Length: 170
Image 1 (spheres, helix red, strand yellow):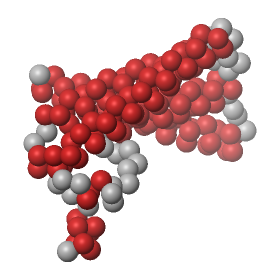
Image 2 (cartoon, helix red, strand yellow):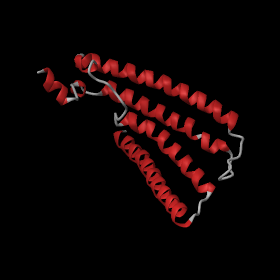
Image 3 (cartoon, one colour):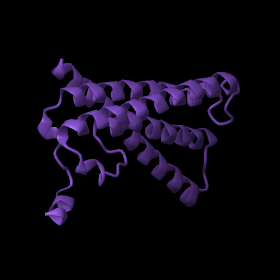
């Protein structure tokens, strides 16, 4: 099961990295074409905006899996490792509730506004707006995985992570 999870995480990360790479190339291309040759295409510009939105929302779940989200752990580090586990589970459950609200309301928005046709790529806006609920569902799965990992983690995983803070207290 761990091997399947590891492969899925690598694919998830790979899709995000490929999207970021494509976005970087396209932004450089459009800037060069606009400033050197006075050429621009509204479809490419709109695709760049859509790709930017995709990379932003795609990264939600990656931040959860890699613990790269913003956290202030000064108070958290004062608790014993056994209690930290359940505080982490509670925090993840709060994130899951917020993410579920995000999925619900972004789905409502996509259904309501997605019938419009985009001006650049001339596709239904639901393809662009649909990025939000789809990535939100993926993020919810990542949060659930994180909750399971937190519950199964050894007690040592909840020792203070900030060595500089630990040295100050000693």
